[in-house]
Image (cartoon, rainbow, N blue to C red; front, side):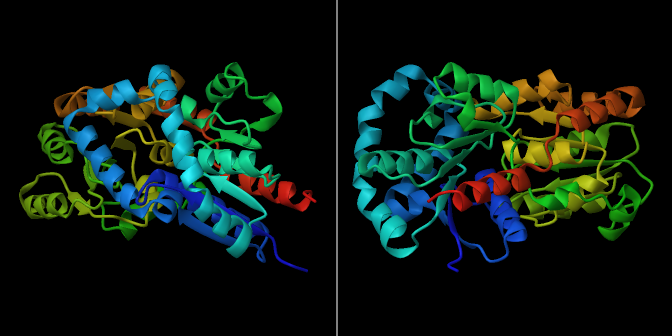
Length: 377
């Protein structure tokens, strides 16, 4: 018997989209140990030069002109104006896709955690009349219109909000599954706060605040640590700096003179443990990070969301009552003081996180994929 094959595609390395892809891949191998998977950056595979150029351009726009990205994101006028260019790019990529899909790897299903590779494969199916099962997996709490394609067999969405958006845009209800954002199963395992704190070098009985600046170490992490250091509440701080080595070095050097205990980390593999040890997380509202926090019933303070997807994520999290929004680092300190002075509010946010979370999404998605490929002739 020939083992089934699944191709997983994303376009941004060191991102939540990639972590989501890895979570699905892991769940597939757990449920079906003989399955063969390939997990690739679809843009780097088809357009390696443009992939680097566009990533650099995106980071530059986000840092220097975020309002430009806000205008471009999910704008129907922009979507319409780039339709011809998008179709041309998809057609130009068809030769490489043919090598991957029909000549070399020959997958039984394709799973995409970003809209670009999903659209590329959907149009490839359309051009050639293929019946290859294609799954589009959203990794933000609110959808955007760049996801909408006729030849996607299943959309995996985080919430009823996303489901209703797709239905309003003409996607059949039968093609939508509200499974949530896929996260690593490790986030569903509880080892206890005190034991976890001891393991990572913290005081076991002391409240803990986790600051995460995303994989790029963006955001005013340094200023937030300084602001938290000045308030009276007794707690300790964990700061994750991602690939921002300069930030990690600065915080580590300053830690000796802080009154509060503070540990600074780079790009880490044990985010689940850091969240387990914490009582509150201060973070940018990426879809994966906030879904991981929800799985840990961890109240959130959101700061400086990127216009577009992150502002929509913020709106969703505020509506669910699992997060508060801070305008700046001083506002973070005020909200933190209030939360640690109000255990009722903190407990209510934990309770709502428990109601909102969908920790088994990766397994649910993997089961759907396996069902589809085992019933495709």
